[in-house]
Image (cartoon, rainbow, N blue to C red):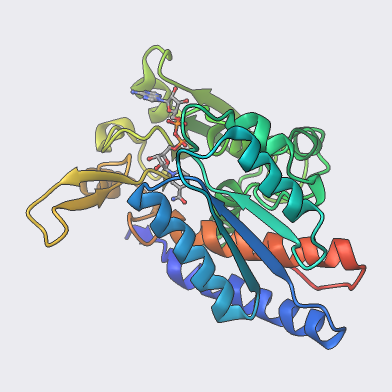
Length: 297
Ligand code: NAD
């Protein structure tokens, strides 16, 4: 029987841990604060930001929101980030990507104080992750690691194929899984749009992580018998639903499920973990900045 991982259930357990940390911080007079910065009218980005703010409210994390018009200047964005850097009630800053084309998003991310960089995208935090001494693990890759742990998947010595080499998913999950640390010790192959014979590589893998942003790219014929399949993709495809679309992953679920021993669904797999790990990083950031210890597993 294939184990379909319930990402919502695992995320709920992480939220309980975070809730305990919020209480411990509150007991010492610290309310953790997360600022979201949105410079876009894109409905998907607006939805992501409001989901993050709602999650903060539910756990007693102070949500601070800054909305900039898409026509605002790059300097306006930098001013906003610098103001939040200097605000002691803000422990985490999340700059919702993408920003408009006339703004250099990478440069804006570099202005986020590395101690408040709860996404883990600042070069200092990327460097620490690569060096094996992570401060904040990027949310989606960290969530994947937690899902594997929750499903009792032993990564030690396993062959992992990652489909996608982005800065926010592909590269950081590769870095986490090769760490000489619990939840790591894997042998990792990172594939991308220029990779030859992708299916031959994925078929050899004990664990396949699909993060390409291509609907149902990985089907059952590309999965080895008994493999673990983690589907990161979130793709909107036209459908006759109320909203006019449905969400599908980068994995063709039904055919992959027939081969896999463990698989994540879309929605309800990796997605809920990303927000849970953002909350996790926010309480970690509040603890680092105030010196109040928290117990995060
Ligand atoms: P991206 O577009 O930045 O990167 C995609 C990567 O896939 C690139 O490295 C590209 O080389 C590779 N790729 C594209 N087509 C390919 C192909 N045919 N064969 C092999 N490799 C191919 O995307 P991203 O930001 O890493 O996101 C990937 C997917 O994960 C998207 O669907 C995104 O919506 C989703 N995502 C989900 C969450 C979540 O919380 N669930 C978080 C982040 C991203």
